[in-house]
Amino acid sequence: MSNEDACKVARRQILLWYKNNNDGANSDGGSEPTMNPAAKAAADCLVRLALSKGSGDNISVIVIDLKSRKKPKGKS
Image (tube, rainbow, N blue to C red):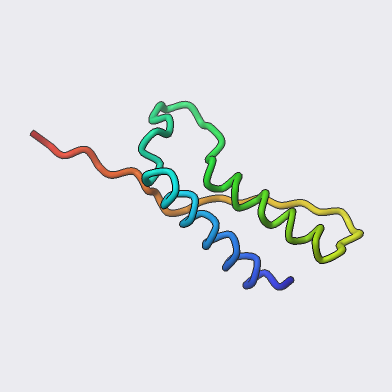
Protein backbone atom coordinates (compact mmCIF):
# COMPACT_ATOMS: atom_id res chain seq x y z
CA MET A 1 0.00 0.00 0.00
CA SER A 2 1.39 3.39 -0.93
CA ASN A 3 1.74 6.21 1.59
CA GLU A 4 -0.89 8.15 -0.35
CA ASP A 5 -3.38 5.27 -0.10
CA ALA A 6 -2.65 4.87 3.62
CA CYS A 7 -3.29 8.60 4.15
CA LYS A 8 -6.58 8.39 2.25
CA VAL A 9 -7.73 5.46 4.40
CA ALA A 10 -6.67 7.21 7.61
CA ARG A 11 -8.38 10.47 6.60
CA ARG A 12 -11.60 8.63 5.74
CA GLN A 13 -11.57 6.71 9.04
CA ILE A 14 -10.93 9.86 11.10
CA LEU A 15 -13.80 11.70 9.41
CA LEU A 16 -16.06 8.68 9.90
CA TRP A 17 -15.14 8.48 13.60
CA TYR A 18 -16.01 12.15 14.13
CA LYS A 19 -19.28 11.75 12.19
CA ASN A 20 -20.30 8.74 14.30
CA ASN A 21 -19.25 10.38 17.59
CA ASN A 22 -20.91 13.80 17.31
CA ASP A 23 -17.69 15.51 16.22
CA GLY A 24 -15.94 14.27 19.36
CA ALA A 25 -18.21 16.31 21.63
CA ASN A 26 -17.66 13.87 24.50
CA SER A 27 -13.87 13.78 24.23
CA ASP A 28 -11.71 14.96 27.11
CA GLY A 29 -10.93 18.66 26.84
CA GLY A 30 -8.19 18.64 29.49
CA SER A 31 -4.66 19.87 28.99
CA GLU A 32 -3.06 16.46 29.54
CA PRO A 33 -1.91 14.76 26.34
CA THR A 34 -4.20 11.84 25.61
CA MET A 35 -4.71 9.30 22.89
CA ASN A 36 -6.91 10.62 20.11
CA PRO A 37 -9.69 8.02 19.64
CA ALA A 38 -10.24 9.03 16.00
CA ALA A 39 -6.55 8.52 15.20
CA LYS A 40 -6.59 5.19 17.08
CA ALA A 41 -9.57 4.03 15.01
CA ALA A 42 -7.70 4.97 11.82
CA ALA A 43 -4.55 3.15 12.97
CA ASP A 44 -6.57 0.05 13.88
CA CYS A 45 -8.16 0.10 10.43
CA LEU A 46 -4.76 0.37 8.71
CA VAL A 47 -3.40 -2.57 10.73
CA ARG A 48 -6.43 -4.71 9.85
CA LEU A 49 -6.04 -3.72 6.19
CA ALA A 50 -2.35 -4.67 6.17
CA LEU A 51 -3.10 -8.03 7.80
CA SER A 52 -5.95 -8.71 5.36
CA LYS A 53 -3.55 -8.10 2.46
CA GLY A 54 -1.28 -10.82 3.88
CA SER A 55 1.55 -8.65 5.14
CA GLY A 56 4.10 -10.94 6.76
CA ASP A 57 6.43 -8.11 7.66
CA ASN A 58 6.48 -6.06 10.84
CA ILE A 59 3.55 -3.66 10.86
CA SER A 60 3.87 -0.30 12.61
CA VAL A 61 1.21 2.37 12.28
CA ILE A 62 1.18 5.86 13.74
CA VAL A 63 -1.69 8.21 12.93
CA ILE A 64 -1.70 11.83 14.04
CA ASP A 65 -4.84 13.89 13.46
CA LEU A 66 -3.42 17.29 12.49
CA LYS A 67 -6.79 19.00 12.06
CA SER A 68 -8.33 20.16 15.30
CA ARG A 69 -12.04 19.34 15.49
CA LYS A 70 -12.62 21.31 18.69
CA LYS A 71 -14.81 24.35 18.24
CA PRO A 72 -13.31 27.52 19.73
CA LYS A 73 -15.14 28.92 22.72
CA GLY A 74 -16.88 32.18 21.89
CA LYS A 75 -16.07 35.32 23.81
CA SER A 76 -18.90 36.77 25.87
